[in-house]
Image (cartoon, rainbow, N blue to C red; front, top):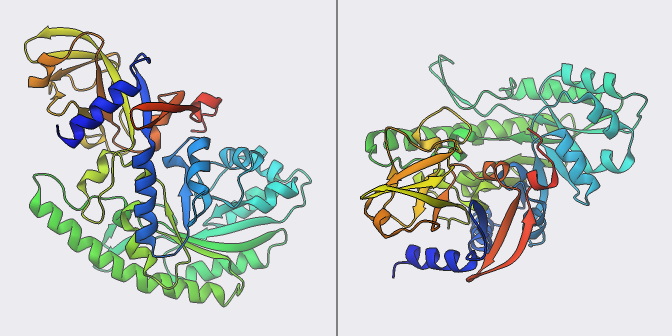
Length: 400
């Protein structure tokens, strides 16, 4: 029996009492992935990206391990909820226009001490000030650096369109603005290199493209390491007691950790290891988060139909944003239908061995987005479900 076949047998036994659709997290794989992230970080602390987990129980589990410290959140409402739930050191990774949330933050000493907000524009400071509603607590601020690689005098740009602050001078100027604005304190710098950490460099069947991605990423790593160090020096000249410099992502942990200017690494998706990480050479993780759909039809030889399945991931629409049939191995989508809103035909020889009611196991394309489809995650150890925990959705929290 192959390792994948053994996993399928374990998951089927563990969930035999549960009707599909159902979602699980294999705790052995989850913990092994956490160990791998820590190894690659080389002693630098890991801030856990909550958008990639979206389950408080699993956030608590990983943060209980030595080497993990702090949360990187994705909305202000989520940040405040986590802070009220006992989490501390929460870095909001994206600017917000949540005026009510800012009023709550500025009016509560515990929230203000535990949550750091993101800015890249003086207008965001003005919005926060206007939203205070009398709240006088000092607001902790982090400035985001644009990590994109600019080539040929800026005519070619590689990287996500995030912060407009690209040069050390631009970041330092915003740092000076924060420093002279009452009610705010600059505590950190963040720089997420998505074109390095979030792009696979071994695309199946595309060797030339894969080589081009590896060349781009090597160039981008060198350029960003130099520029990030210059940015940190420029900002520390304004704010000597800067608390942290955050960088990285699951796909670039070891490279970002090697930079002296970086004090902590962000990672989260690597705990679940969704299918997009199959295209990376920088690490190999174990799929930990899966969902199962039930076989409800057998339309013909080599075909079964499962209920549901149309769970695409965010990003540019394409086949790489679709879940992938994982167990049993050898199933694929009908190219004329793909994964459907309410039913999904699956083709392949293993279909003939599946019966009505059997489970087919899938991996989502991305990590935390799976939790927007399921209220609960069943935690599997060996061949048993040892706990069932709510996702954000299961707690009635759909932040985006």
